[in-house]
Length: 314
Image (cartoon, rainbow, N blue to C red; front, top):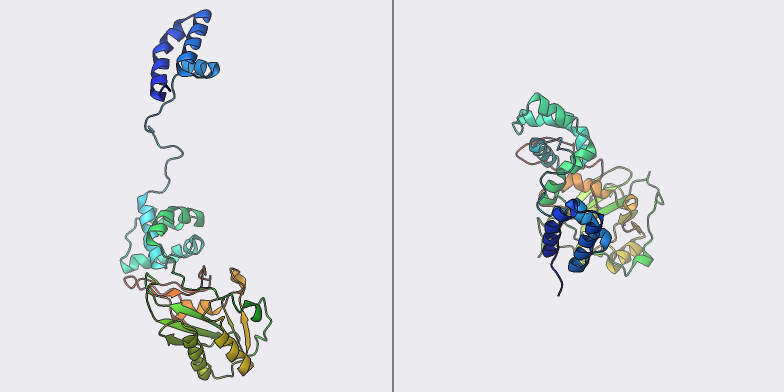
């Protein structure tokens, strides 16, 4: 029958006093007795008798250095991060010297001079560490509604760097925005965003759903709105774009049709940056899998604070 760990430690605790007072020969006999009862190796038994049983109770003190920044710093960072749409630590650290006074003028923050100096001096890495738990609770990332279409990938070339004549208007990058709120279940409205590479001219069209025919009809509507002829389009790898309907339309109209390389940020459509300007709000999410907001895109701001972070050009 196996002896429990607690019982082994009790035996060692009782024999430890005798062991410390015994001579050399007696110590050897005590060690042999412990080995027989507990099954420990003689070296382990000798170490436990000499140093005692290791402490198994609750930790008496917190390990490591004491915290440098208290909960009041985290609260200030949380307000600032929420006001800027939960941007990354590098961007938030650069914006804090101007953002903190703006929040104080709006009444969202009331800070002492020492606390204001401490918060504005935080590094980007410290900001990310302090806000890590809050970010997980808030879940500020948008939902993805893109389902990759793989049937026609071999027929639609990948746009790498500059295969188009981008100095000439007419080459568009297109993308979808899903106005689904906090869940992708059921039907919801989408926005098709088309941006001209050369001029930056952007047009948007509302869709009842993201079906292939709806996207094609919306693209035809947007084509009539642009003041220059359409010469080509570039999209992501979603099935709403990579389908026979849109490929046939581009072939018949002699339009260049390219797609981005999956999971490579540098080849994804730049129209997603315009999505941040035109369509992103608390109830809209980009319809591209894993896409992150670019450095130049604006951030959404809660209506309670009303801080203008970017200007929307058209």
